[in-house]
Every structure is written in structure tokens, then in C-alpha cells.
Length: 459
Image (cartoon, rainbow, N blue to C red; front, top):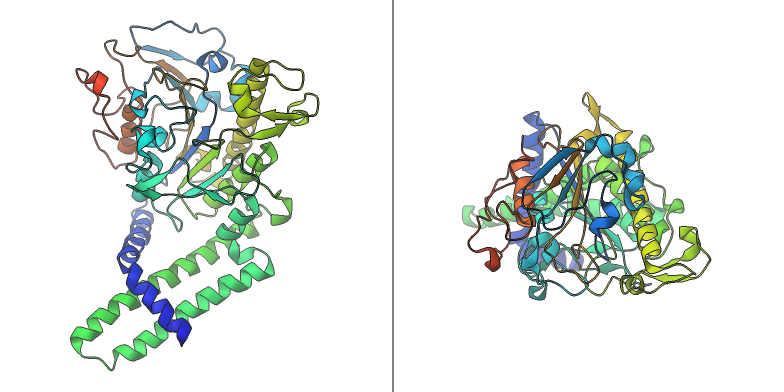
């Protein structure tokens, strides 16, 4: 009885947050009933900057402060080593360059929440980030899933790039095994499965008690209790959906097994494991929005990897040191930087392959997914943020014009210049949740039109 009283007290305290969960589940059901094609969004943020010269397709010149929009096909061009693992997806890709993000600071080492929120790094979680905004529009059993690797060996959860609103940090799980247990508890080890079943049972038990009690109350008191009954039933329904989805996906061998997941928080084996978990969560229908970060967020950029992982001599390589021009394992910083990001792209390519292998409608899951590959610190380790490169993979079932395109917008303060906020409003327009402005405006562009989407990308 103490447990029940404690649980109901907690429900009362959290009541305001439970009805939105019900609305989210209802919205997802309505989308399915209406026959809408699914939409999924995956943000991949790598630390240490996205150096434009390292990702420039061969045969396309890197202009100096261009004054006009460049829009050309990627067909016939070769991707450079830093991103060449993505070559199989070049016909699904749009490289979007020239967008600025000066509103973020410019930041030291990382824009933190500002990278996805379009506001100054110093403000912390000042407002919602774009991944959270999309998660609200396309809720799943888990509204948003954050996964990543960082430089703290024993870190479980960090708060680095995503926020649901002012001061509402969204977590990034850095331990693959713990992320696995949280998402796939109904098929995890016996202890985790027992805890999952116990939670489900107590929700059912409490709902039965509330139903019995409500028959003994007057109308006004019964109406109050019905609120808690609805919350309990919503949570129980969530548990049922979670178990059914996970078991179904596990039966088709589309969820990673815990024995294959390495313990720890850093290195490319851990990043590959996190991408495998991300794929499993999307395939099982547990979420529609995932954010994966590799050394993203201020204070988490110094990931250590072994030179042997990159094909060099064994030894510790510090990503933060590489960003400052330090060589390791007999290699100069530029070679290491390209190799590090090559391995990031390899992990992403493996994830894309997993989604492409799953049939959906008349295509595959990848056809209805958009991956936004970017850095949390613009164009270099100590960025100026005049240019924030993006690589978009996927077109959301034909809602975006991203197939095999290279777009470079005019330079900062040149006529026709656009910002990263314009890209984020583009995503929201494509998702059917349009708004004309996202984040804060760049005051240095006060005489420019900063509103609206990038029409070149919208269908």
C-alpha cells in the first residue's frame, strides 16, 4: 500500500506531463489511421567541426565568398575521403553549404544546444531544439532518443545538444548497454525483463484499484480520480505498445543483441553500437526522432581513440588535440582529422544500410527517413560560423528535393544569403509543422530576410 500511495502521489505531481503523453500516442495513432506515410528524422552531430575543404566533392571548386547560389548535380563527382563511405548514397544526398550560424556565438569548441536551437551557446538550453520540435510533431512511444559517445569514461547520461524547451534538457545516453536496456527492456536480460513486467503489472493493478474506488465517490470526486485513471491507462498502453513493438522487431532479428554491445562511452566501436541501437529503435517503431552525437557538446569534445582503430600505429589520439593541430601516432593533424571523420561516416553508412534493408511500402525505411549530418561547431574546431555545412540524406518520401544535389548559398551578408535557421524551418515545413522562424535572429543580418524555408529544397 505504501508503494501505491507513493505512486499515486507521484502521478499527482506529474499529472500535467501525462496528458501530453496521451496526446502524443493519440496523434501517432491518428497518423496511422489516416494512412500517412511515416517520417523519421536522424540528426548526427560530430565534434571538431565540418571543414569545408575536407568534404568538398572532387571536380567542384570551393569558392571564396560566393555571391550567387550554386545549384548543381552531384552525379559524376567523387566524395573525398572524409565522407567517401557515404558514396553508395550520393544519389539520395544533398550537400547544403554556405548557411551561416553566427547567432550561436560564435562558440568555443561547441555551440552546445545552440547548434540545433539557433541561439547563443552561452544561453544553455534557452529554447527547444529542432530535433525536439520534430519529435513533438511526430511522437513515438519514446518521443526522442538521444545516443552518443563522449570523453568521460564512466559517463552514463550527458546533456549536450538537445532540449525540449527552456531549461528542459534532453538526455544523451553514452553507454550502449544501458541504452539497450532502456529501449529494449522487454527482451533484455532476465533481470531487466522482470523489472519491465513488474512495472507493467503495477500499472494494471493500480488502474484496477482506481476503478473500484471511483464507484464509491460522488461525481466531483470521481471526475478528479478519472484523471489519474486515464493517466494510468495511458502509461499501461505505452508499456503494451513498447513490448509488442520490441518483441516483433526482435523476432525479425532487427534489434541488436546485448552481447554484441561494448561497454564504455568512447571510440568508434561504441559509436557503431549506438547507431545499431538507433536503427533498432526506428525499425521497431519506438521513436521517429533520434539524435546521435560523436563528441558533441561543450566539454565532451576530447574523445580518445586508439591509432590502431584508424589504421595507424597504436597509441592514444585525442580529438581535441587534433583540433588544435597536434599530431599523434606519427601522423599530422590533418591526416588524423580526415581519418577520424572517415570513421564517423563509416558508422553512419552502416546505419543507412540497416534502414535500407527493411522494406516499407513500395520501397524501404530509408525512403521515408531524413538524416541530417553536421557538426556542433560549424566549419572548424574554433569556428567563425560564417559557414555551417550540412549533408542531408533522404527525401522523406519525396517531400524534399535532396537527390544528388550540391547547393552553396551566397556568403554571409551577400544578397541571397541564408542561415541554418532557414534549413530548420525547411524541415518543419516538410514535416507538416510549418513555422516561418526558428530560434533567434542574427542581429548582424537585421537588414536581411531571415524568415521562411529554403524553397530550393521544398517540393
